[in-house]
Length: 260
Length: 287
Image (tube, rainbow over all chains, first blue to last red; front, side, top):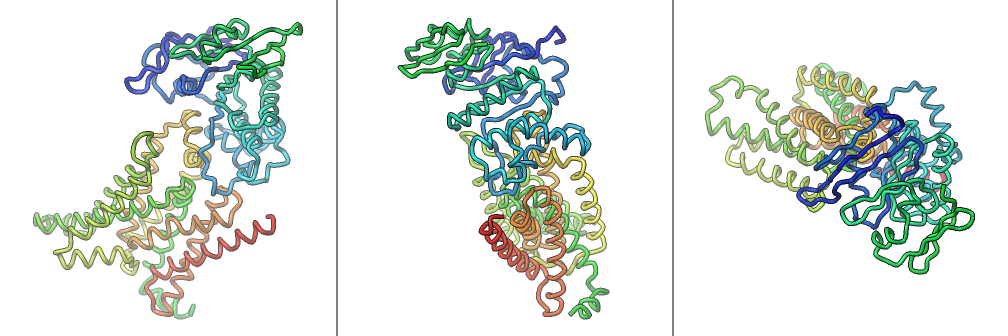
């Protein structure tokens, strides 16, 4: 797939666990510099689609085409939902982040430069010699993102990184990601069930309904009808005069950030 | 004491060299076992290797296989020990499967099945039972020049694989989901590491017995875990602890006339206790 700025193209994709089809006929085009949100309730197949995208699950039907520069996966960064690291092991933040270079040829100097860059981006410089397990939840999540970013990816896939974070930590992480998306044109695919985050930060949304996916620019997907179908609760959505998008679920105020 | 040890060199140098090489090799592989928190795998694989030996001895007797030279030699026992430990490592090295049996349960099953069968199979053969008891209790006195060569080669090979593949090996051991995401074939890695673990344990069991093999596999790596601040350092500290402690162990065992395998494992355990205390003191001091 060499066409223009397409990063990934999913055509008529169906994915299944054994005989149980989870998603059917998914069509999705992700282009360079877009900030995609995979949005939907828990258990609707968001992580399953990610697994298929990462080659960890074979599609039942259809195909996933990656731009040729991503076929060896060196330019893809992945931030998993949780880290499998054994918590009794001694691991400094530096060592943990450097693990992200696995499979990439770098000399010592280049590895050090990448490390410094990513620690600065993720605001982890002062914690670099600390034990990974002594960090707070938000800092650990930033270290996970740093481990993915040290590969200098052009396409970053992030699986529910804000799930267990407080509002401040979640915001700090989102600001860092937005910064990378805007300044470095990093293409991001962000999986979450949090509607308010999507209203704040997404340029494009893939909304997961029962067994199917509606995908496109944020303003076309994020409407009352779609959201009520996806979440099964009354939702109010309106645009502020400033252009900012606002979402309300069952009386809970949502996004007030700008819809870019 | 040292003079005494040196005077025993002519008689026991192969046992000492094999013992040090085994401790060096197993302690390095042990870092991965400890990193993956799969310590009990070492015991299960060692026990499965003993079952392989017991089965070969039983089959040789029952089917009169000693007509064939291969079955009269020690090689058949070593090969079966390796085969059984590789199979056991492959079975126990797999992760938990959702809705299936836990990894611990499978490991426990392999251990208990091998432990019971290896005794049952040879229980009516006095020589066989004696050999299995010897393996379980550990003795490195009978190590040969071939053992020294084999473990030297395996050590060189392990180090030369570990250096260029260090980050990939570590990522596979520490975070397999991330490793899979960057394109590493986890099933293949599992297979290769299990085969390597099985091969080394299988050969070590024949040369040094179960206690020494299991002790060298997990205890130096656990000592290193408590002393180090980075996983990377564990790959240096664990072999140093293993070889250093077994040198002292051989010295003491020779001087006081104790079995060297048991002496070394007891010293490793003492070392681990000291490492725990060191870690506590370091943490209390805010280090």
